[in-house]
Structures are given as structure tokens and as C-alpha cells.
Length: 92
Image (cartoon, rainbow, N blue to C red; front, side, top):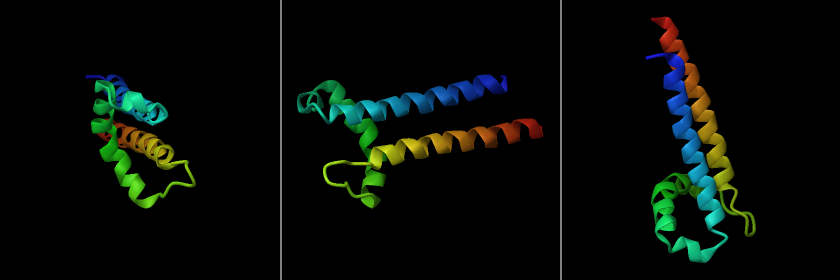
């Protein structure tokens, strides 16, 4: 399997999860959506990851910046994973 195919699948997975996080954050502005099936699904998928950041980053007034930090770290992990996979691939 080609390296670029592997990296594109990994990138797709990280991007989809980032979009799910953005959708979950936007969903918090409309309380009726939180009780829908999509809202419950997004809460189940996103809340464990965001909960890690909410322990350490308190809201500033009414603004919760933990999703911003969570998405930034997710992209940082994705880029680091790309570097590690490329190094391992080119080593052999």
C-alpha cells in the first residue's frame, strides 16, 4: 500500500473528527438539537475528548475555549503522526 494512501486515510479520519467537534460546538447554540439523535450521537463521540480539556481549561465568562485547544491539539497530533509514519516508511 502506498504511503500517500495511508496518510490520506489518516488525514480523513482526523478531519472528520474535527468536523464532528465543530458540529458539536455549534449544536450547543441550539438546545433543541442537543436532544435529537444526532445531538446524542455527537455528545457520545465528542464529549470524552473535550472533557479532558474542560478539566484544565475553565470557561472565560460564557465562552468555552477548550474546543479550540482540542482541535488545535488534534491537528498537532495528526501532523506528528504523519512525520512518524513517513520516517518509518522511508526507513525500510
